[in-house]
Image 1 (cartoon, helix red, strand yellow):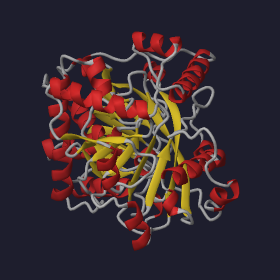
Image 2: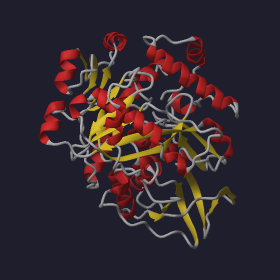
Image 3: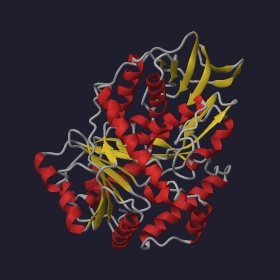
Length: 476
């Protein structure tokens, strides 16, 4: 949804941002738990988990559920859920492959198994939330991919037919313009694909905090404000140094994602791409009625530079995406979390989509870094003779897939061959990104080409077609 010209007066949409706080809405929740103390001594354990986002939290929790006797320590450099896990849109998707199109292109022979494993993983997330009493506003409402241009509507219909032919359309319904607007009323919507079973909505920070609480209850020793500084072999195990202490462990699982890996050779496989979002004030009953949205699905549009949007539990609209900003050199810095020029663009696009919501104010505006890899979906591996495992590269679709990745890491550390570790997507890695200035130049050219394709009926230029053939891509 990339309007070629501003559809509203500039003063109108800028005024909607006048009271927006530059902080993530989710992390301001009054239910935020206090941080656990930092590590200030030497520890030993069976399994050390580095990273207190979803990846690390699921790994620690699943490790204890597999073997309650396993001694587990988790280190987090700040506080659990403060980074991507507390800043995302709260779309918990079954897909392990960043959507069916990406999965079918890259792993056609495994796609049915990947879909089955993904749906099973989402079921297990729902069961874990219930089992541990995690209050995270979990709603399995599904998601609608909407077309906002004629060519996109045609592509969605053709794609649905292809999914039916391949036996992959179970639970996926094509909606024409009238049907999609009956679900969510926008004059820009021309068609939609509703995945009824494969996506849930949730409060992302509450999920992270609930997972931390569950880990603590099962005996995981969690240390926050404790960055892991170095990783090295130590006898038959591994040692990690922290600012005030150290941990010796038999095995180590790295869930640091966008932050530089403790394994230097892994760092070239990911780059940080900054994504931004707005949150409105709660909609009134009349405002909500004007939009419809009775079934509370998540939505995303079908352009290359796409938006994602959803309702919160208190009927705010989260509106994010479109701009994907790669900082030269791939640095992760706090100042990149705030970008007013993107907020202004997002606000204009929001009111183009929902002109009936004119007058609604935004209360929060924020950004965060996504760990992007060249195939858009997670990759895995081991180091130090199998004593260290890692997973990274979820590329913005990690709310659900990180639990699967946690199980992969545990399988690898336990030396088990499972249906997970036998997958090609687990056994093989993506292509690494080149060094600067080639990474920045390539990403900038790809972004320009994607915007151009959106403006020209989806036609991909020579650069994009070449990237497709090489298995490299970039998705905003």
